[in-house]
Length: 150
Image (tube, rainbow, N blue to C red; front, side):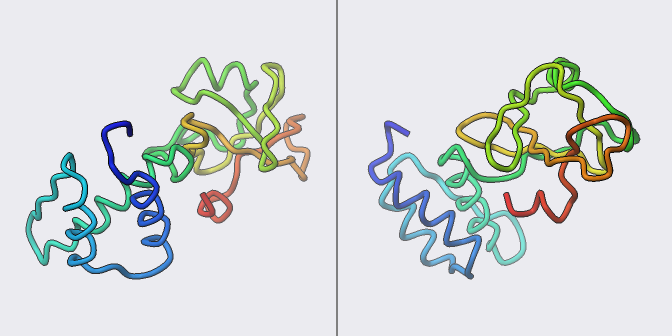
């Protein structure tokens, strides 16, 4: 980030691209202001450069986006401690939607799609109160719909 001239503008572009359509012309104009950015089109219309730049800039912010991949596939309904989840994955923290950091002995009910997000430069597993109180776990991973807000 230190080598970028206008990191704030790049991050803002990434956020705007999530909300509205952007043109290739706009992307190339923005990229031309930063000597370290190289865009290349591969097949089709080349519009993929829009998403590629937006995605890179959202990662640059350190607090935006779901992490690719899923954890614990086929283990829906299983209960693990926070410490166990951290030990078995690349997840760095487990936090509730208000930002509360779970302690190592807290129990988490795994859902169908266990996904992590990037928050404050860390890979975080967001959880919520387990309203069903299933498996003696106080917490549950977020549903697919809820994880989309990240």
